[in-house]
Length: 342
Image 1 (cartoon, rainbow, N blue to C red):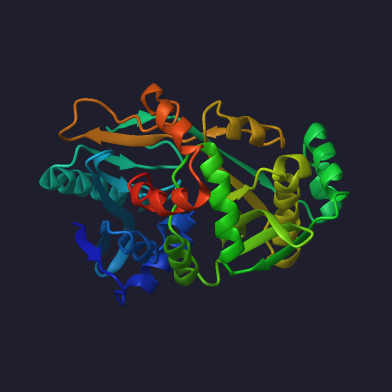
Image 2: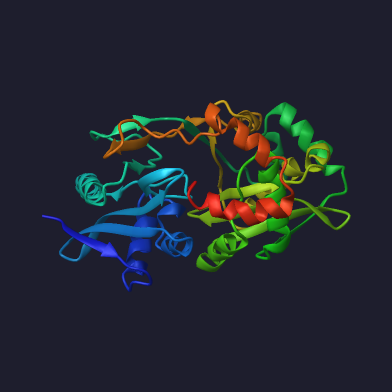
């Protein structure tokens, strides 16, 4: 019989939790305990459940409640993260899923969402609206470039002739300005600078910022994570000039090379994108095969599954207006919305 436990902030069991996650084949960076600090910092309540037998962890399930008047009320594993769900022994995972369902019913949320990376054998509703892209990293910059699709390879070669420079550090100032402009141009609310700083503080050894500059001006920047031999460029973008400079393409290629040569990574996870979106097509151009993400749901008080997609027609006007906002206004207003769009 499993014993249900809850991991609290700065719990002494957090080390054991992370060791367990790291040892599991389906344990991801987004299952690590320190995400609690990031999520609670923006005002959400966490419920990090784990199952034990005789004191030994057999499965973990990170959860957080995201509640707002505009976007609904959900219990999610895990907000702001592309992967989630229970990790561990199959029977213990099913036990934690049922406990999560009971919790969702007690909280009277609209739905429970588990962001699994792979298909699960359970009774939950599965819906795939996103795909992730990943590839193996070759041993040298030349081989990494050779493994990229021909047309994209030509774009990168063009960028390599643009006299672009890049830096690697954990300084968020240039990153935030660049990323803010990028998501504003897409019509998406940006997170606060404090949110990104909380990530850098929570994962000082596993996060890094690569910023591309043209004549000392930051034109593209990406905040990446490193976990279990894999690099995950997670928050990235460029200013308007990035398109003509091909600086985003330069950035991701340099990150691949850096991760392989200096970080010992052998795998590159390009993250998730909405099916058939612009980002989805861009990643396909690199030669990576999309793998659909089988996110799972259970309706609690809602009568239908949520649709917070930017492709939802009711958000078109909002996106169009947001793209016209002055950057400083979007940086002030964005964090008040983005914290509910995890």
